[in-house]
Image (tube, rainbow, N blue to C red; front, side, top):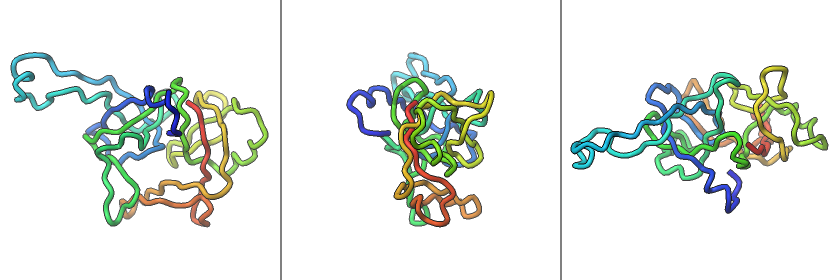
Length: 189
């Protein structure tokens, strides 16, 4: 998220749901599930409980505009993994991950359809949707909009995350790279 003294108090922490099959990274649309806090029985207090402590909300990849609640963030990404073949940090099931909810006013950079370059000069409160397959912002249509404001569009120079499903790798890609199918935008939740 964009550095803002007040925004850090709107950051939430959750964990990647155990049933997720793909890693998560900053900018992925998430669906938040109600978290569980273990009871305060003797086994919890003595440290013998397997669920000793608060984990936060379980986060799954959002699959529709009806279940999207916000976006995963790189902020406070203490458990994200970087490997020699995957240079972008990623969180696996059970790892903690930061996220921001709609209505938090947090500003988040996300990938977007290059067609949104046409929005430059337009009002920030347009109609925008989310491409759940490619994890990027798109023009909204009736019934498939998300509550965000489009603040800025970066024509070139944006740093995007590229997930290669065949290799299972997650790497950085500049938006001015000919292989990039997205541009970087700044949205406000």
